[in-house]
Image 1: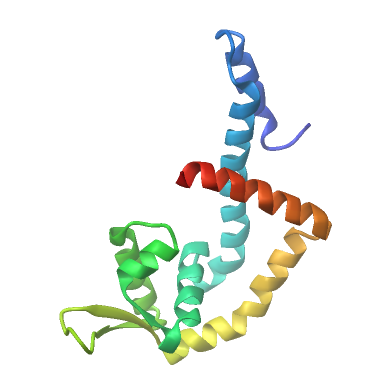
Image 2 (image 1 turned 45 degrees about the horizontal axis):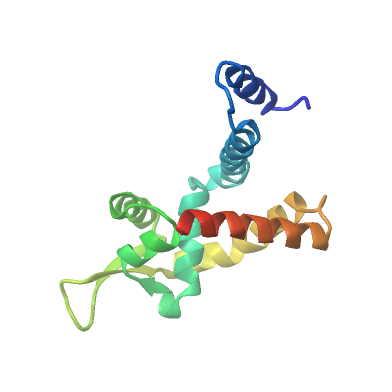
Amino acid sequence: MNDSFSPYESAIKSISKSFSRSPVREAVLTRLLMHLGSNLGVHFDAALKEHGLNYTTWTSLVVLYSQPEGRMLPSELATYILTSRTHCSRIADELDKKGFVKRIAGTADRREVHLQLTSKGTAFVEEHHPARRKQYRDLWSAFSAEEMSQFEGLLRKLLQQLDG
């Protein structure tokens, strides 16, 4: 295998010689998933860079778009995008500066602040969503429907272990 992961895999196998009963396969699979996640981020970020966004900020816009009235609490958004509230606040600041979201006071409790997708944010999602869908289709085009189902099942099984 000659790819971006090969050097790391060689290191894992080399280190395993120094330790008896090293879980080489488990280490390779774990690191391969982490490596893949990083590469996926780079892949998807590249297409969004021209708009001053990354995959996390794009995902935030899409999550807001999916909500009734395009609105939710920052803490809810943080849960959806798997980030801290602090990082979500930075994302909200960035999207606010671009005019994609605004902060509005809650109707029941004015101390509560919601993130609201603006008309500019809505238009941006609607304009760029087809290109993001094409990226997904292109990425997975080498896999059959059966392979994707198997892979999804295996990933969900691993996630269940982590969520345990």
